[in-house]
Amino acid sequence: MSDFQLDQHLVRRHFGRAARSYEQHDALQREVGDALLERLGFYLETPLRVVDVGAGTGRGTALLKQKYPKAEVIALDLALPMLRAAKQHGSWLKPFMRVCAEATHLPLADHSVDVLYSNLCFQWVDDLSALFGECMRVLKPGGFMAFSSFGPDTLKELRAAWAEADQQPHVGRFLDMHDVGDAMLNAGLRDPVLDVFRYTLTYSEPRKLLEELQGLGATNADRTRARGLTGKGRYRRMLAAYEAMRLGGRIPATWEVVSAHAWGPPVGQPRRVGGAEIASFSIDQLRGSRRR
Image 1 (cartoon, one colour):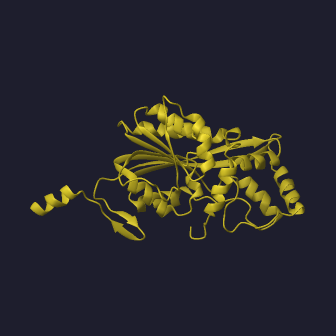
Image 2: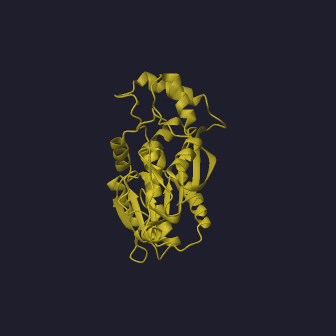
Image 3: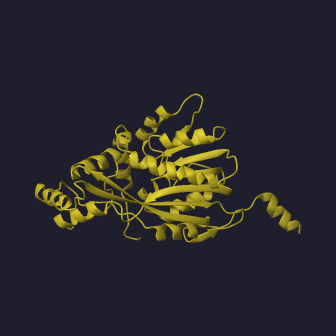
């Protein structure tokens, strides 16, 4: 995990540029999001505050507001153009707030969130301890978080095709379920449940997949990526290698999706921050313990 580093400025720029085109290419994101919304059935309370981390163009946020009409629903994203695009999914009957911030620095008070939801965002965060530490911090005791993320088999065909052309990393890397689960437990989140699903999308030609990735903003932001322009010769070799993978006349692309949920721990359970454990108690609890 130590060599997994993303250029967050590039991530923000890619998604900012994709704000206008995103919903022309987000069929998979919608399907994964619908499945993730079903996980919210495990949460039986009536939430007061619901946060959509990595809300993008706000389609999922609008569905959360529809599900929890009395809750304060917040769309949070690091790309301001995405949040501007999200305005279209709000309404005066079912409005939601829009906040520009990073998942590792949530501008929310401790224990202030009942439901934390994130659809296909966490793969763009390389510091899992900071990410889940923030989730732990803002969740109320007994609060619920549900998220999805891409796993390491995502775009394995495109990665293999590029490997035939050169040895440079052209496709982003994603952490597997075990790393994610360990990070959740280390942060102190309770009873995590993780599942892996695989989707195969097909295209008429490799260029269609590349156009879709660009339209989604889901292009390589790895710090170890190749810099500068890719030569035409290497690009043609990659296309030829991908063409050899045709199945039934179509170009396949695998998407591995890690889907998970967990609970906020009770008050007083320590959370890990920078290798140390921090426990929180209310003043009344501390006063009561002194009286005893």
